[in-house]
Image 1: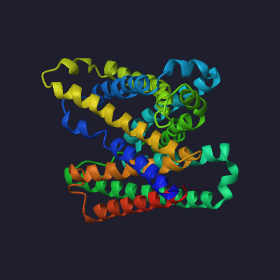
Image 2 (image 1 turned 90 degrees about the horizontal axis):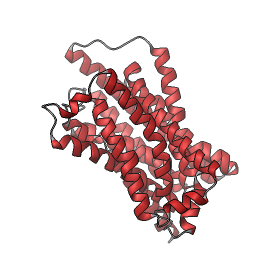
Image 3 (image 1 turned 180 degrees about the horizontal axis):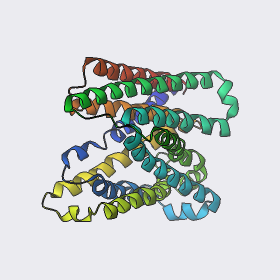
Length: 341
């Protein structure tokens, strides 16, 4: 029975990763909008409207739970959301500086490791030397290896496609780009820190009648509100700088664009919420064990959808083989980390 419930919890986390890794798909059919146009609507939908609505629906006394939680815990949750929002923004800047391959390798490598290991070291340091801790470390090593292989494949793809298109590889500012990557990698796991260290709010929600499966929605509503100000703020800055506010009412804009950006928010937040349910079902180390499974699944789905939608067209056989090898390694990592539960 325990093995069955553990498997169900891990599969729930994987389901969240599938949704989360698919959230950007609608952007491929929104060519008339600039990045900042899409990102602002997505931020309103996925970081404010849906989290708050779901919290109000699934947490019977949401505001009561918030009021009963200490201000220090609430401030920590919001601060973690702001930290994640800053990491998300820096991720986009890093891609512009050093390219997708190197950015993914550094940022996701740091995020996967810190997002799992730091909560373990703070809350249960003795677990690091247990059999469970050793299995987790082995799984994390596979996660990082898979990310590196996928990133190498991405680098080969970019090189091949640039050669075919006659474009020069972007260079310069690499050192600054690496610093931005490191900063993004350190800040991005803050969303998981908020989930782990915001446990008192979840317990208050449960005490006031919320189901343990949905109590985490109270926490996400606060954390993502903090992340919204950074993501939306940067989008508004770009809309002003690039003078792209008018794109919203431009001739190329169709109703689908608004629905597509809102759908991005639905897919993104649904993935986060389902991850929270699966991680909660994993027990007291759910945020430690579930995070690398979630991250690996997100990367797998991003690569799969990239292949399906033609992103790897013209990448060459070697890059394609490396990409699928990285996916296989990440699947193996999920299986190993699931054993730690």
